[in-house]
Length: 368
Image (cartoon, rainbow, N blue to C red):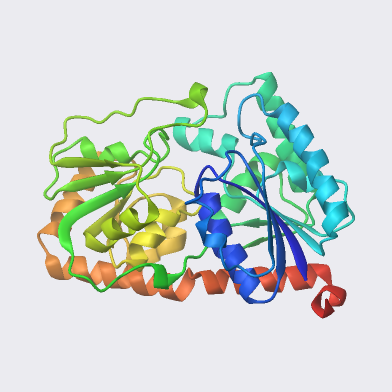
């Protein structure tokens, strides 16, 4: 079986793509991977070494959610059509909406990782102001969702949000994201510290909740402050909190070490269709402190300790509660770890995608 996969290199979709493509290759699937956005650094693409059957083609076409992306989307569509004619895949797996309407008589899976409109509603409580670009974006997303053979979302919450905005796709399913447990270390002794990870420029991540009130333990915050779209950059409200150490944008190995050391992880996002960082923390046996939003409840159930939605004072109170009760903290860490192993491994994710692929591509692909 040959699958063509599109990805972007700007955010967590690249991590998701790494787990998916490497897993597909282990199952003998030949993958043509095309990336958009920024050309990946050598360190970002290091994981491809030794992945059998991978045909990788990086591009710098702008992504559909970027202002002024219309010409790049048109050019990338033509480029994709040429690659499809060349490699003749059995199935198309798009991690962008705009390619769902591509004119190819091949099964098309569109994965809904996030969306500008649902992001805006979660952050500002209302739909974004109308503009020519937004009208174009809505049309592109609607066409892609409507034309896809099937739409996959990483959570039921994300699928519901999309359906409320754009209408229900003809066929859809939920496949939770996954990470490889072997990449993380849950066995080291923990430090009394709380970790927050997220793009500092993204007010939906609101990691600044950790800095608005004094915390009972040291606070470590890791994340990039460089928004790829200057028009969308905003200054976070860091407040007057103390005992905070800004770690900046870290390499993967450095971030894993923070997960390993931190006793607690604060999942502060107000918009999180899935959230790979909380999963990575759970696989490192961190106790999860989660914002009280539906997607976190869907994913983590009673294995996380929730703070009042978007309330930094209540987050500080919950941090203090876990800091004062080591047994309770260890219990939450172990519960999150077990939940991650049971529900959110890369192997489980890849197997579910394979089942979907084979159901769409038919027996010819199975024999190829």
